[in-house]
Amino acid sequence: MSSLRRSLESYYGDPEREAAMDEFYARFVRPGDVVFDIGAHVGDRTGSFRRLGARVVAVEPQQLCVRAIRRIYAGEDDVVVVEAACGADEGSVRLHVNSRNPTVTTASSHFLQAAHGAGGWEDEVWDATVEVAGTTLDALISRHGTPTFVKIDVEGFEEAVLAGLSRPLPALSFEFTTIERAVARRCVARLTALGFDAFNIAFGDDMALAFGEWMSATELAERLRSLPHEVNSGDVYCVAPTPG
Image (cartoon, rainbow, N blue to C red; front, side, top):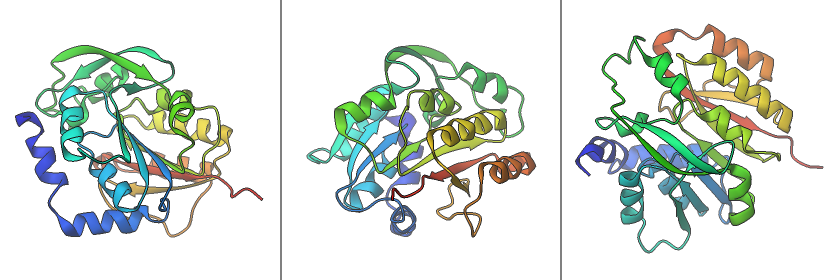
């Protein structure tokens, strides 16, 4: 567990951070909801969703992270841990492992190419590969029910995750990076085709939407295009029209 110590120390034990996270996610998550945490890492978002009263399906392919989540949420009947990588199809997935910094382990070879030599990524090394089980959002929905909210944080593999979704959902978020803006644009196009029509951004680990009004896919694409490289990463939040 030593390689996860930095994540565990950063993501747990800070009541102010947890309160800010809960306040932020409360706009998407209500008691009794089903929520998917795709790329759960050590489960800090899972913790927030549980505090908000949701039943959480935490999907994570790294064995060490899975062990940490299961230990942290032992005895929690409303936390289901799925040891798998989420993608376009069920079946084996190859992970590129960053042993020193497991939070950026990825199933995307394109992400590794984009990170190579990029500012802010110079010290990251992916030093091993491992085959893991794969699943899809559609398969998870069939087994666990339709989620009210899905959080996706999979280091450049977001497009593949969304390819495995064939139905609209109330709300969803996915991580973007400034080294792979084209991936984010394709994700937005996919989500628009699924019926999502309003978008916003949270930068870095901020628990706040950056813009006061939700925007169209076209407006979002322009925002992403104009971001300075130093922003590095953030999350795109997407909502679908309320039925009726």
